[in-house]
Amino acid sequence: MKRAVKRKTPAAPRRAAPPLEAWRRVNRRQLAALLGTHEDSVTDFARRGMPVLERGGPGIEGTYDAVAALAWWREKKVGSPEAARAKREIAQARLAEQTFAARERRLLPSDEVAGAWSVALSGFKNAILAVPIAEEARLTRAALEGGERAVETELDAIARQLLTELAGGADDAGESVPALPRNGAA
View 1 (cartoon, rainbow, N blue to C red):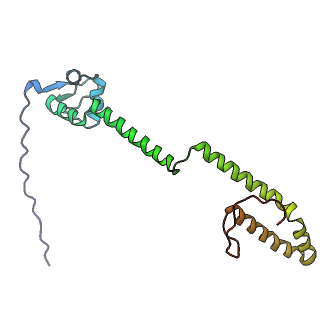
View 2 (view 1 turned 135 degrees about the horizontal axis):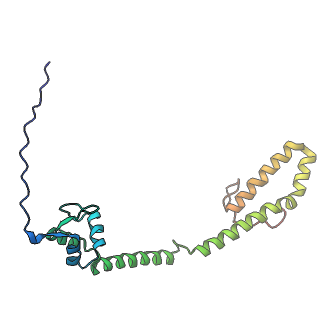
């Protein structure tokens, strides 16, 4: 089976852009004066996408189309009061969203969160440290009656009970358990 061969058609010759009027072709210094900015800003604008006729380099001056560059600048409104106003409005909207979230208690101040964590961790630490005293009789009885295996079983039960209480979840019977620190014997 023969494959169709695609023949390349000669490309249409490129037409050179019509020459610009001399007054439209400006250098960086002249464009900066037109825009009312510093020459370094013109270089920055070119990096951001402003049209450039010929890029410059060390010792070679670049050229710009004044009309195209001014149109780009007006479209971007770089450094304009409108851009500053839009930036301020966005910042105000973000602040309003944060204020609203804080009022609804969806956003909490960091010191309040740190305080709550401190209290929770302190309660956890106290509950863990209270286990040997609060459960001494239970563990002694398990050691005397069932040995090491019975002590492990009791420690497992105590740990599960402690974690359930601290989490404020439900116990094995499915009843709700308040998240309160332990206050002595079980």
